[in-house]
Image (cartoon, rainbow, N blue to C red; front, side):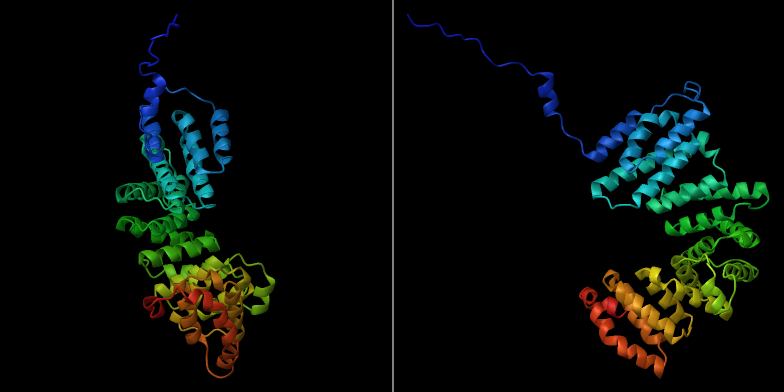
Length: 389
């Protein structure tokens, strides 16, 4: 007798798991937009839970504890309906801070930019925008500039005009640092401020000049140079130079060497580069003090600071002493492999113009073999355009 064989089919209908497997996988950026869009319909202000100050402070501490943009995004998605204006400002600041630490792959950068766009949209809502004071507005602009995220001319003009309204309502500026941050940010983002903003900016900066730090002074000058927006009024430059000189403590080389001036390499290069770009005549006393201090900080100069400083001195027709030029050569040799081709071209061009005749030229000539040998790795990237720049 033959054994019976079951004829029951093993085929099953489609299951939920099968349907999920056939579902298309969305790109990361689309997933991010999808998640953010799902939270777009937020409760009204009346239905939102009322939190106490301790809860908001806790959110701020959590934001400051995040170490990358994705952690911030996850926290934002969880708490979006409960974050107040201070939390959002802390979010922008921390995002700018952690984004400086590493470069991102293209898909990650697209996701981060989408995240920033939603944070900016939240800050633009009246319940947050109406609470932004001068410092808050400047911090938002500063953070976006650090992130390289320009929300657009309309948004930028709106924020700058809000800043102007607050300054006019207050009858002046008690926080000059915010003004310098705003100038640096709009220049960094390549945005031309409204003429009305510039007309109000320069008088307020002029009156606040004694309260500006070296970095703030450098940021103002750099921003003006990038935007090609010279100040209106003859009182700006005397006030600017007086404020700059007050940070030098003294103008004899011995005193500058012994003091602890607060100008950093980036500040020095910004002041000199901005002055040269705007074709200003820097007072000799200030120029001498800057060069003395520059030499004392030479070991901290990066390639961009070296190139910008040398270009500025050449453009200003300055004549640094031989010992200063030799110090620059030594510093340049130590970081030669880090120079970009354009920076290296500027370096060689400027040194050829700054070196005088006689002993100065001979001393530099003796250094030439070692100098150019160190530059060989970078020379392979030269092209005709850079070489003629």
